[in-house]
Image (cartoon, each protein chain N blue to C red):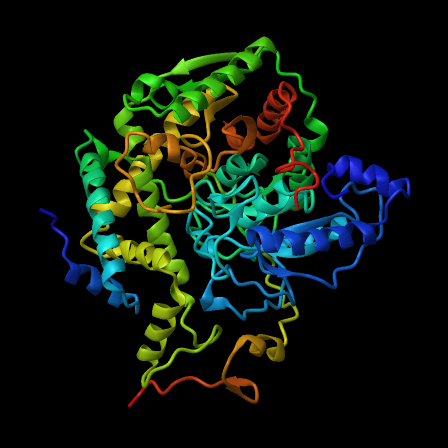
Length: 486
Length: 98
């Protein structure tokens, strides 16, 4: 039953057709089976128990927590060897808020180490496989959460998103991934990667479920001064599917096939599916225009992201020394001990990113790299905000196509002409914009996704447009390989 | 020819107390070149120096200061649970001064 929507599960719980204990037990059993198939979990909470069912839609329902959220008394590793035994003494605020709603955590999901990757291959517990095809990646960094939700373990799992870490795994796994406006959900207790870009969010199998969960997670928090009062926003109640007269734009330099002279058949098919979705929305009365943006500005987005995120990560991860927490390194001096801990604890990808951050933050390099990256970030965000004055949102395909094969997968900057199509979701993090990915088709039996991004604080509008688009297709509530696959 | 060298990469890593293998060093070098090429494009943008750098996702945070009221603190015993090496209520640290 855990493959059903939150609304349906609540109805069954209220009517006594299933108990919270039964749902929790089912989620734990599915977790164990899925672990053998795809390896998406760091911890399965085998002694989790059902909770009292109340009027709250989420009460009694099992869910998963990405392992970079602090959970009191439960191992929280960030999928890193540097914190392989770390058990927090407090809950992240988002987890506290969900507990108040009455949900039950049944596992902690694996991620690319500290959220700093896009393949699902750098967790200290091993590679996370895509449930639609175990030879392919889930993308990252919310890989385990995406894998588990797509497999029907439960209706939702928590994610975090610094560049596209909720929204790309959602696309590759055929589910919904939503990161709300920056500061709508407290980041207190989320392991920081790049604080100016980090967002909390959720992975679900429908837009309405995403709205229900974020309604419960959000709220102003004394422990995170970047949060804001969203008490006047009720996402779930705002969804009505009425989109007549709404205006969207897409970026010509990203979706026009002419930009890709060597386009693969997969890319052509992906853009064709995107265009079909555009037509579906137009039939609902949505006005969709093509907008042109300076390609030079778009092409530097991935490097700007790397500069900002690596610099911030270098600072944020400097407290990982193995002295006050984490396994202590070996060595005669404290310097030797810290170096041993960091050299052997961090994966090669993390080390690469931190070293890039170190270079960028050198005094002599800051203006050329870090400050200039911030300037381009401003130009891009200002351009988007100018467009959002006229438009309700930006609509684009996610990635160049389906999930790549794990064999030979890389996680490094590319010079390919498709790089901007692969990385454009970073715009949503630059500006803190609400952004949601939903499934919109299949290529070679693998799902692909489409994304809607809107202006800050306009989350309800963005979700409503995504809901209307979702309603034109048959991909809501999909389970990888069908309900009996795990 | 790249302006970056393996020795430079090792130096930047060492400043972070991180050691790199030869393979890791090579990968960083490759990415340095791509980033530098793109950052050169940015440096060449007309008027870029007059743009105010954006340092956070939102520009209009309103910071409410909390009341200065003491709250219960976390028990030291709980804090020490994640420490490998401590005596009584204090963390045992490596010798810093020779």
